Image (cartoon, rainbow, N blue to C red; front, side, top):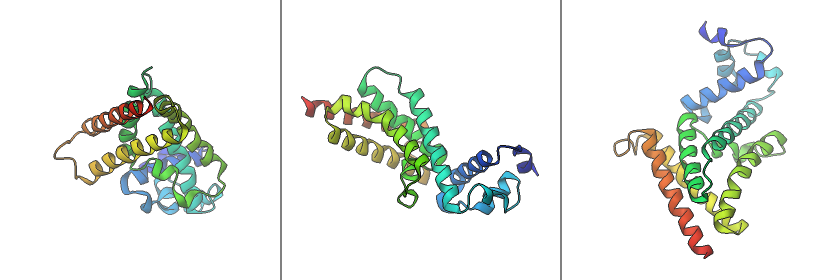
Length: 198
């Protein structure tokens, strides 16, 4: 009954995507189903299909929303003028995001979601457009900048996933502890990139 009160007529598409994001956060991407999303939204099992012909379409829309949320969080976090601190804050913000949503760039750039979805491509590009200038400031080279972002993302995602699995909780029980680990690594990666640049 409580689920039905959350849905307001006229915004079913957004309500379904929000429910899908919540389901992923609770159970992971594999658990996402159109039927469970409809149940959580308080609509019939057939209602979502007016907006999303398949689970894959719902997953794509959810990935778009995840990218938009991540981009908004990065925008707030990246307020330092120092590119080293900006990279550190990107790592910190990314860890928080993945721990909260149980997905990050792995969802936004998932292989199964590629294939001409303009909205998803644009949303992913917006995240990269926010991060790439920082890496370019540090490296001065587009390929090195992409490599730097790959290293940061892999490390931050790893920290978040290891925290979610429980592996790091005894050493660093709080989300902020894990986020700080990613920030420290971001600073180290940034310093190494600046040193290589000379």
